[in-house]
Length: 429
Image (cartoon, rainbow, N blue to C red; front, side, top):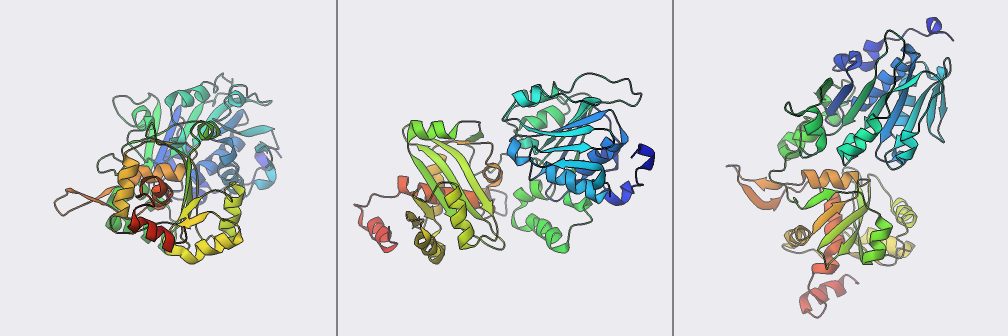
């Protein structure tokens, strides 16, 4: 099919409101930070499907921090976008690679992760030029240098009169300390030739009332998190419960081998709250906590939780779960998670657990995106005068609660102490 035979597409109907300037922009950097539900990823996918069809010299590289996350995110979004625009039959979707080919010309949409940089720097295409890159969930990229390495692979030129190169960056702005703010949003240091906008759920006319009201209610229940999740603004460090953490790439297996002390914890939810699991390596001597794995999912049944733990190789590992769900914990024990135990809750246990974590330098593996989010948005409450209280807001802390439970074994009183020993015995530990 030639370009003249391509179906007519109502772009205005497809993208809705709020993204007109984004669609038309051709500056070298095109950056969107946004709230949850602001349709930034879906709009970017629609835009690239449209552009691949419009510009026969163009190829796209889609980049995420980890290559295996592309298949369930960017690849799926682009496949959805082709269907939305009524042109899916013009594209070949290779899910195993993954890779997308525009059949009339042979143009490619390629997917890579920063966990395999050699596969990025050596990319070549058969038709046209690799002139566009899309960094999705760019907040997960720890350093500006890693970002620059990929940008440098977008090089060369093409004789087409409408040719342009462009780097598109989309992300949720969890912390103002991230390099993205300095590079693309601060007037004194931002890159030249940059188009940068902030979008929110308010431009998404396809959200239902339940989701819309949930975002609006955050301004009442957790204004600090609403700033990021609902308004798309930068998370600020003031009032954070934890300031002793950083996101860092490390080898979990190597850390486990070196330190030989791990901790696993779970918090349970279903409809409104997720079931979470978090795993860390605990270096008591150097006071370092290395968080290397997580799980975060709603509506998990007992069998789902069992299968998840089995897949993670945790069937024989000691796991501390929320004692509010004793029945669920017993069901998991009966199924074969033999070393699962209930957490020991009591007056002051939350602050005690928080103080223990605050005594460590915490390193979070960049793959643990929900842990990163919670550490950047878990804050203390404020009184009417705006003074910070020594009590955290009980929200968006499902990973952190699981982490507290997992570390009880290292800071509760020893079994020789009668009160703790009786509590442990009563819980069957």
